[in-house]
Length: 160
Picture 1: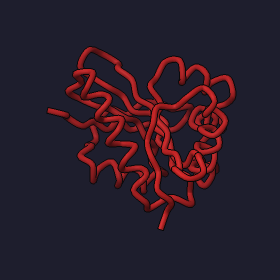
Picture 2: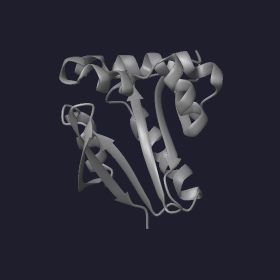
Picture 3: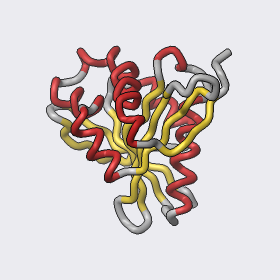
Picture 4: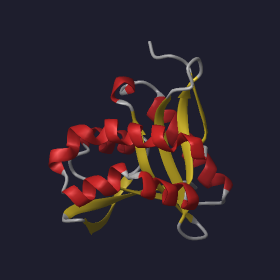
């Protein structure tokens, strides 16, 4: 059974742990991504600073040790639409409730900002994540964009 955890807003001091979480979660998919797409997904010391400045980031933290075991970012893209980005859970915590709690926290944050719709983008190799999002009410919007040479599929969820 996984250790008890809490979800809290990320602090600047969490940047390295967030990078480690992203790297761990996405490493199995490295060969399915273009090099540029992978770097944009796992971030760098510079790009994490940008994300922390421009998005609200949450982390899942083990209560006893303070270890960061998951993360998600969200922000407003318009007055009524929020966007999720960078959902990651350490591989050793897959199948636990960490991702569910992170998603619910981000959705609550966006609801509090009066969002009526949430979007997220994902890639075809992430079938486990796609199934998770579908179970949580996200549906394909039909919008597909280029993500550094890969198709990027938009999913949407109405919060009404």
